[in-house]
Image (tube, rainbow, N blue to C red; front, side):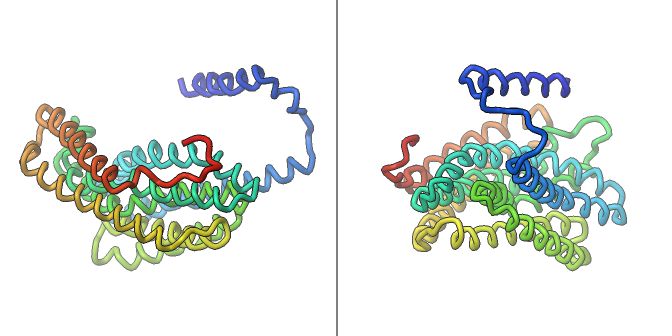
Length: 321
């Protein structure tokens, strides 16, 4: 099924190319200076992705010397957390990537700055509901999705604790995904791999330092620290080398994001006591948990709209609002 899906995807990409006549510009040459640039960029991106994958490998290596069940719980927690990151963060980064590429190609720093700031803003805004949900409803989410057969209460407790520990660092993961692609759009690929290497060192150091105090939850906490470190450095470097954004604008919108987060936190606390309130079976959670999340999203979305987070001023040159 997976192989067939790749074939369908390849055909889906090819036929629009044929329709617009683009295939006549694609000449099959074994090597050229364009190929050199392509492979140089591809190798750097592959190494960057491999560096990120090392986070989970380090976690599994350290978890193998802990109590039984931690390695499995890590795998399940990665499944839950990556659903949020892979669907939402990558979707946002992919949507903005062509606009950033076009702005950098035209050396339009105003437009590049607009999309850079927009990406940063929406990365955090999209991460907030997941951060709050995973923090408050960690065990309920695990029960609803995973508690079957041999997946017992102990597995729920361990996996839930890991998901909760991952929750507060999701903004860093969302930001990293977007900012890395912003650097790719600006052809500053080497900067990303250097920062990822530094983040890897931070990850290892933080994990070894925190394990004694936080036990297995030190693994996601160390990943959170590493992602936040990488995202912060990328943001600082990007604000200087890619496009300059007014720091007051960052501060103003950050305060508004904090307000949305606090309202979401309070709303989740209230909904947890009113609706969830001890429900611990699949039948109960199958209606209560989706209802809570719909209400929570409506509340947070309404506050974000009232605070003007969805009405970022658009440069005149931007056609696609």
